[in-house]
Image 1 (cartoon, rainbow, N blue to C red):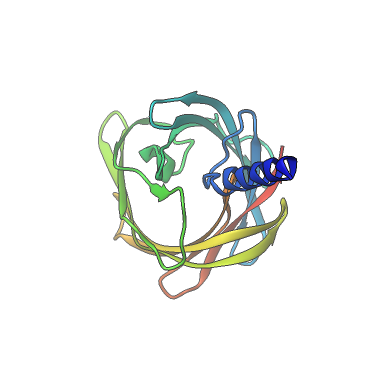
Image 2: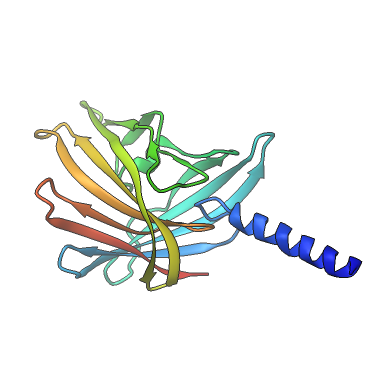
Length: 222
């Protein structure tokens, strides 16, 4: 009976550990490949996210990520972008630069709070706004772009299938307001699906009129 009790306790502890995985990859060396498609489903490119290093801190851990972009034929597009993600007890904090496109040939400075998501998700919860600024020094002038994420809410918990497998996910919606030096601000609706231990496994981007612009799906894991 005592052995059975110990086994049950260990099973319970294991379940707690599994349940407490953050919504982000935390295994050094993991490679997550995403496929990008346009609104009609045509492949437009790939992204390869690699967990380069993990540093333990007093309150959590800092993960160094590498993001390499590829075209539709999987030819590399520029150099890989490196950014950091901090995982604390109750939230995951992304570098501000993770909110912007990469492979831009200019001297760039990033500022702002960056994107933050909770380590635990509950349907109906709302998330705080996030905002970041990118200043590009073109030599003869500086160009400033801003991304603001607002109206962020966990809509549902549902199972979805992508190239890398089938996952139980939390479905999250947010509004992105993108301001660039050229033209008026652009408003988009983003739908993301997050899985424990992986982060987002699928995302969809829509125009204000609900026209689907693009899709990104987790294609494979190594």
